Image (cartoon, rainbow, N blue to C red; front, top):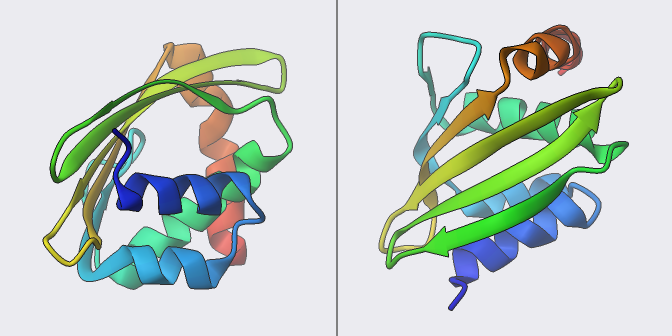
Length: 129
């Protein structure tokens, strides 16, 4: 059974990347954990910036979710994509509160070559935001 949080996440990531949809999903104290940055990115604004950049970066690719495991207040979504001819595979670990707002969004990615392919693109998109 898919939670309403994950349904709204799919609406955002697959349907136009509407900032209002993302804003409604994120708690004020949301934290984003990047596979490329050691320090957690704290707060709604930073979390939104990373998720918007990722949505834009993967928007023109074959990005898709392969599997989903959903609990009462958390989910693991496995994704795959090809970025500049490089295969990228990873997981989004999403946790939300009782209000249905995301409090933690952690991304893990493999292979290393895939991470290397996305890092400069994400950096560029983050600079633009």
